[in-house]
Length: 286
Ligand SMILES: CC(C)(COP(=O)(O)OP(=O)(O)OC[C@H]1O[C@@H](n2cnc3c(N)ncnc32)[C@H](O)[C@@H]1OP(=O)(O)O)[C@@H](O)C(=O)NCCC(=O)NCCS
Image (tube, helix red, strand yellow):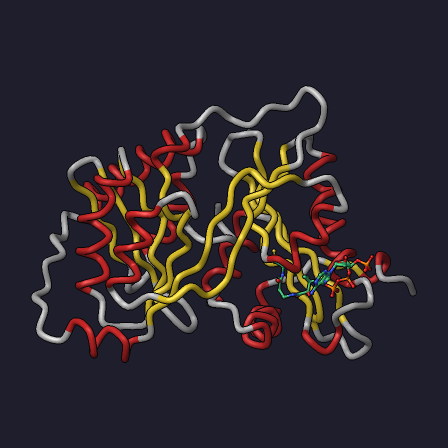
């Protein structure tokens, strides 16, 4: 049987097997993230002869907008290089093109090499920064906790509004799901808003939105000063002030990503205000 014939749709019973892909690839998603893709989107997988999932890809529609996000393109390390990544990616792309939507994604360098072959082009670049818990302790021991937590609902409204203005589409349902999880913290104030949520190996900061890079700085400082756990943030490259804030707080550059889109003739991206978006919700979420 060819790879395309082995493509299938998983169910919630496959959560452990899907999460094994994340663990073996050392990504940060949790089973709760897979649950989002199974409930709000579509997951395509390839199984091996024993029925174990060895490759995945997900499509997440961005609310009522024409955009659909391609996420979780993952192949078991021992199974890479034989066409499985191309197969799951192709299944996601065919679905989106059949629906007449615009496919977008945040690509790792290995992913970018594949997606470029399908005509995807980078819109801008970003990078993952990481701070281990021990690094925080060494640098910031004794710092006061200054994160002003607003009532959760109020902060979330601020976040959803800025996020929609930044992207040009509303993804309230997704942001509510992320904010409602145990351990999530939503903060907003002074024309800036941000979200921190649990991950498999580190808490993830993002999205981070603000009227300007200068306005995002104090909120980012408050967030990283208040967090004791290991932290990740996916920051746009064209944000030198925020990068300096992260470096001063003990973050290190981990890996680059490229935001990519594939536009068919006549398609245009939703009109957002790019300047508002500083760190993304996660490469898997836009
Ligand atoms: C990226 C990934 C999904 C590719 O899956 P794969 O099954 O190994 O890829 P395929 O065998 O289908 O190869 C498809 C193409 O991808 C490109 N490619 C794959 N891995 C690459 C790498 N490490 N560096 C450069 N190009 C790579 C090649 O151009 C290849 O085309 P070719 O067959 O003409 O040489 C897989 O390496 C993986 O899971 N990596 C870790 C997770 C990741 O980065 N996912 C992408 C998220 S955006």
